[in-house]
Length: 143
Image (cartoon, rainbow, N blue to C red; front, side, top):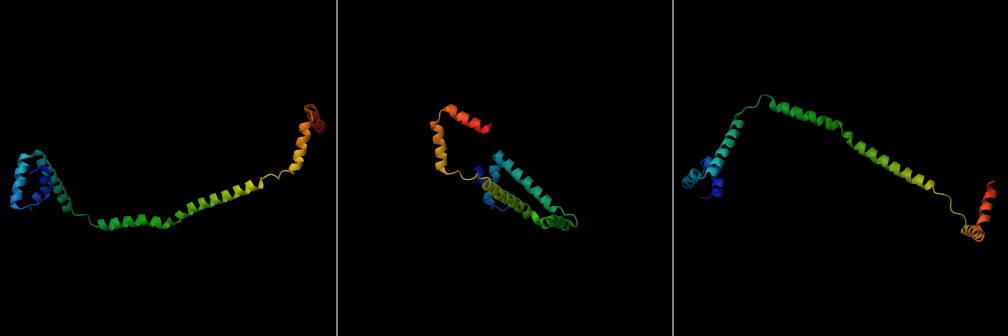
């Protein structure tokens, strides 16, 4: 018998639920294979640990104390029902900020440009005048 087949039957071997023929084949394999023997020992140790844990009796009122602690942890969640209020306030603040941002952007738009014909005439006048006269024109208006 190979190791894979033996590993599949180890739990049944421990519980003595294998037929006699298969049990003797597993026993023969375990006597020759150290790896499977180690797995059997590990499995037996694990099962014995589980059995000792099952045998322990819980302390009195363990269930009552556990349920009481669980209920105490649920109570703050009921009182903390305003958890939705903080995200709502943040969303409202963002919307108000966006509204005022757009409003301020619209109110700061400059007045429309003057008539394009007038702008063209001024540009045409400056284009034909020599540079010194343009500078003198600016200086006369300032002083």
